[in-house]
Image (cartoon, rainbow, N blue to C red):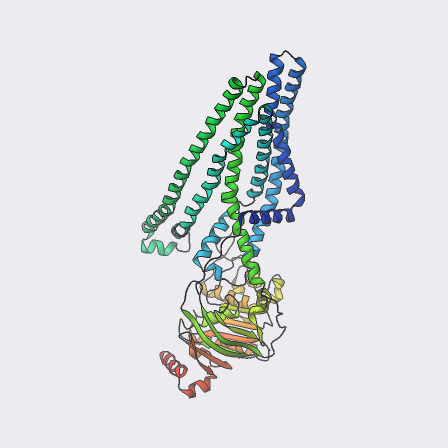
Length: 594
């Protein structure tokens, strides 16, 4: 059902959390990189002081002062180069290491979210799309923080030198405030424009991918929609870029006016020291050097602050949101998963609507799935069969009602531990382009390299013939896009997927969600008979999902769904004797095969 999107966490708190994350992974390197950034800032900031001493020494003919100033300038120049070089190398090493940690952290967070609702809500997709773009450069935020602190240190030293000439010169920093305000305001304006057009940009990327990648290539060429995809992509890109460009131009005008104000104040400060105060040439030289440095330092400082407030800080807020979102879902998982099933699984008044919609695809379903039973879920397309399976796998949470496992709420069990007790195969399976051993073995990662377990799974799934035909057996690379890889037919990929679903030998719940829908009814029936026979005598539940009524007669219990509601429940003989919907549809489908 629809719900409002929670706001992003506060910026400073999010950035602090990201800093703590980096320190947790690389404490020594992070501290060294930060300290070196500050130390490397000092030689450059003291340059104005050495110039003042040099000017005074030359005018006053004080050789000692000239030598001190010259040594200071030399040490500052060499020290600045040396410290910058060392600092850059340490920071690069820190960044390389923390990048891996950040990417792993984001991947782990997304994998830890028990449901997949956030992958289907458009507003969540827009937010996650921007985070995926930002995470690969989010490590730069640490360097930006270090650099900002270094520029602030330079700025503080420079203002102190100016105030040593006259306290009023500190006003130069006040005249720099408009530049700070516009620099922090600009990224927010531009980011809002980007977010308003995020959906258009996402569609532009989708159209580009459709026009340039292999999977849709045949249909793109057959239908001749290539030019239309190009035009649509351009239109959507311009729909995104137009408001963004307008926001950038508007903010740039205000930013230019702010710098004009500071430029006038800088010229006035030089005139004030030279003409009004009548200070010596060394002091004027310090104001010239420090003032010019001040403009550069303020520009760099507000620039870094702008980056932090814009791209980097925004990325940290999105990461903090994902952490909070994952934690909020995991917080309710406080009950253990049973080792075996005693009573079974029960649906108690369960209703469900997909995220962002109000139409119920399951409505007030109350149903008991006894332990040790082979249960068939049947119904026409769109009846809610796959949705029921997704709820059992905790891909979604019910909109209302409860699912109970041995009378314990499923929603309060850790999703990862519950799924470790599940096994199955699905109609919309994924083609893992790995070596055959691993393409099957990922069904139980602990036994992924166990040839005996992999071969046993292929036997149970009827996929032994597929493996036997592969050039290198289990060591064959699947997928022709890889060196030495082989392509397989859809049916062969389907059997590999089935074998993957049989890697776990004693699951609490085995789900076969139309994994053989591409096969004819007779073959599907024979396979289901085989799977059902193998499941007898176990405490786990075997769930067979099909839209073919004639292929599931052997099931202990047949559940008929129709229009989001539970229509009938019973054995094949009971449902046929009842003469209801199951009986009618069974006869209709059976007649088609006579």
